[in-house]
Length: 238
Image 1 (cartoon, rainbow, N blue to C red):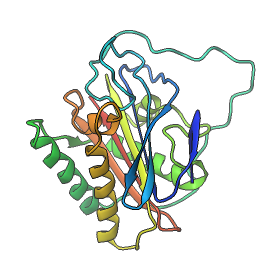
Image 2 (image 1 turned 90 degrees about the vertical axis):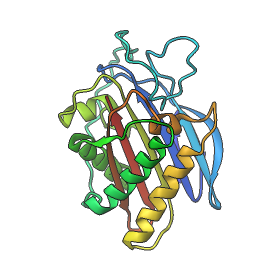
Image 3 (image 1 turned 180 degrees about the horizontal axis):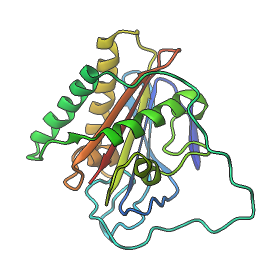
Image 4 (image 1 turned 90 degrees about the horizontal axis):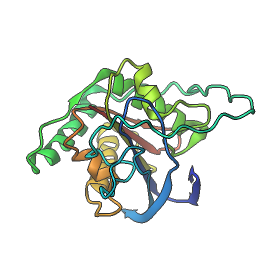
């Protein structure tokens, strides 16, 4: 198992990544590894990307949903003379998570938010579609990453699904192998979310997305691949 966005580490048992963008431009910044944690008996990578428009002193990692939207332009990569890479399309046909699975995972997240006096997230179909398409790429040849080769940035891909946003974020993770039962899939996804929630500063990007006071909407998708790995993507927007 490889996790790669600038930093590449070899993992077994599971992994997590988080990121945020705080304006509607879809721009992105490099992701750097920020710590190693644990999920059960497996190693976990947590990688954080600083928000392009985070204000000085906020200390917001890539998943920092609490960052306030900014009108500052995101940093864009300089033009290059190399030919653009073809867009990568999912080659798998794994269906999206069923409504019963998504509802249970949403209930878990909103229960955690309620404990902190935060309003519940509401599902947004465009975020669901974005999350599912990203899961299909990850379970294919991409592996755990917020932007697979040839894939649009987070902001651009949720915009392509009809989502109008001022800030957005994403949590992704995998664990496994797990049995091919609904209860096992839900349990694995809930465990990933619990690991995200239990993060502590400064490596708490996923937790900040889950407990954001800026985001209002969420898309959730979880799939099980042929090897038994459970892939989880949570997309957020305001």
